[in-house]
Length: 181
Image (tube, rainbow, N blue to C red; front, side, top):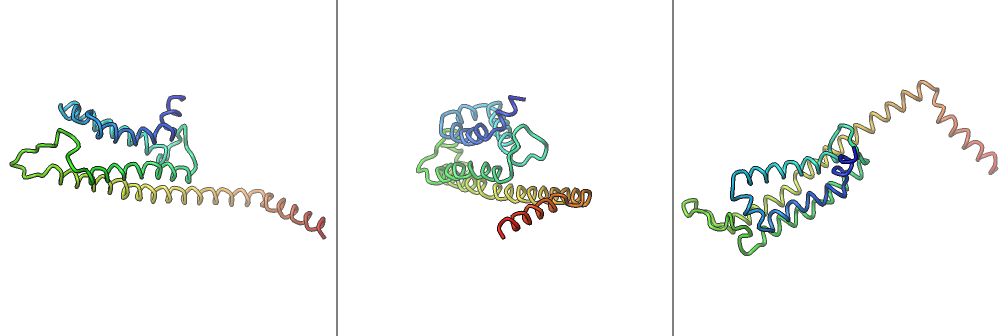
């Protein structure tokens, strides 16, 4: 459908993936959502949905409306990585807590809000790299398996028709040789 072609296109998925992080954490929206259990659940559902929409065109094995080649899928995967890494670095480098919700944790927990945020930035940075490498490896495996299937299909076709394509190519080369010599 037209709707699915739009929401699975990289021009939509990549900005949505990036904007979700920055719009949520670098604006007062995070504090608003964390003010209620429904807001927190809504935020988690949003991130799950955005992740599915981002990764489905890249990793999905079912036929979809926008299924680019493997190289383009890798580029789509890499397109969001620097922004996610920068987000983690921004959290790590911040000199004060960025969200009000976690600015003043209960003293009984013994948590320093800024140190906790810096650690969260490191985790966010790692989660922009490690899972992406795992997705890349899975994508490479899919690509390899696809090429193997295509090669077997071509071999079966060559066995059926006596490899007409190869014979035609050899005839073409022979005609070039007779013209040139």
